[in-house]
Image 1 (cartoon, helix red, strand yellow):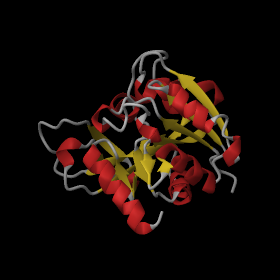
Image 2 (tube, rainbow, N blue to C red):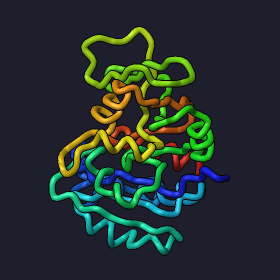
Image 3 (tube, rainbow, N blue to C red):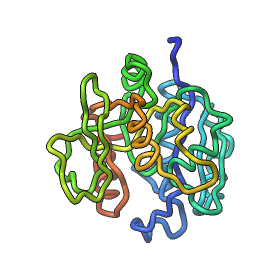
Image 4 (spheres, rainbow, N blue to C red):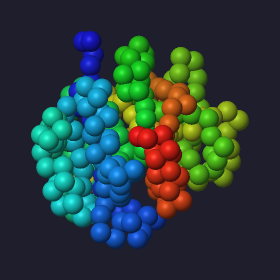
Length: 242
């Protein structure tokens, strides 16, 4: 497959404050999901779909991650790290790897548990006209605490609604956290400052006429941002034998 994506950025710099006491001694991406650190699950799933070069940004308790993952060779992948003395946000975190990124790459949010078929998402991305990116979306029953997108012809996102919402759009899908990005989007991310890919770079790119698309899926995607959500995910994985 000529367009095969072999790189991914896994965003791992978050503090995990709402997951305390689980995160008193470990970063939230290292909390166990059915006996295996969530970050390891991300690495193994990406490898399954042909991703062999990973980029991980660090901030809170970075040595826990680097000591466990090392250079990735134990899983047959290559891992590079970037340490952020001050958190740079999702866009700023990705920007640190700009010189080493290929034209197209996955972005995985470290605290979101996903059973996405990355090959299907990738195939859909390369079908689109001049994509600067594509993002996971779905229906939602709690739109007020999620970022929302208005979707037009051909799956193109026409407008972006960042939470919190003072007014709900007439039609929307919820952003679920996860992208394929064209490296060109990083021109909308300034270097060495806090910047959000979802709330700043993507809306600016859309406003400038760039083609950013939605990938709608009902596959399993859940965040572990709170203890309640973490327990729900843990129960699901145990019940499914995953």
